Image (cartoon, rainbow, N blue to C red; front, side, top):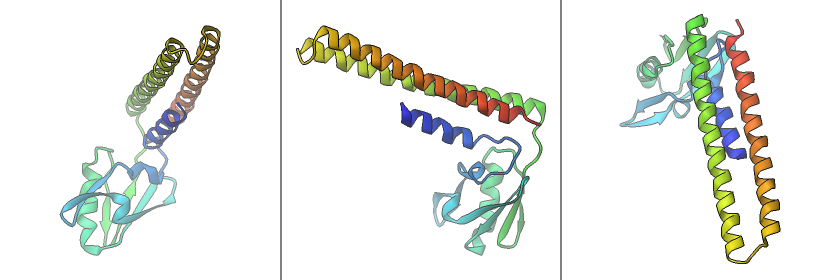
Length: 173
């Protein structure tokens, strides 16, 4: 369940909130040297200004491919190449785009809730099997079931708080 929360936080880091952040370009994949590689394997990403990313490509010949990969990544960014470095201005978010990002965040959150419930189901099934095999008593089964449910409730509460925080960040102008 903790891993699910961590995955959700990483997914949220990739959602654009109007401020530049290096994790914004993590999903970008570049066609380099005959295969697809993550952007961080062919370039260095930095944030010199709150609304600007600078991508420094290590191999000058890869600059065009990196620029094209950023443009085609579906992030709504328009990079400008300047030799070996590429400037990526972060445009301000429109109200429509903010609402759309909130919906995406809610979708990520629901997937995390489902994953947590699946972990709970697996735990409950294990407890039932242990009781059936005589490893634990019915009272122990009931006590552990209550404990598993409490852990599940806590994890889902944490996921919901994370969503609330991210929505506030997205809607902040």
